[in-house]
Image: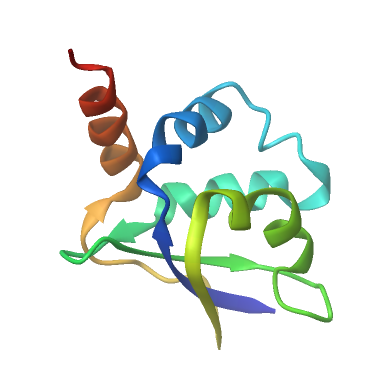
Length: 108
């Protein structure tokens, strides 16, 4: 099934998440890792910091494995909604948002 996912990034984890996306460790994470990365690349962030993306999941409980292995570590307030297909998401591109936050954390 296709899901629209909304969540709040744990800002203190932004640099770590960006590193895991870039180093390939999330994409290598089981059968759903690359799907998560693809979702993050499609994701948008609204003015309130809510991240929205779409992805496929075949678990009986939506995103059960994804939440246990990645999502709950980096996001709060995660919700899902069934949709018909992948969606375009409004707002700032999530990867750009992560990069900006990570740079701010590294500034003296």
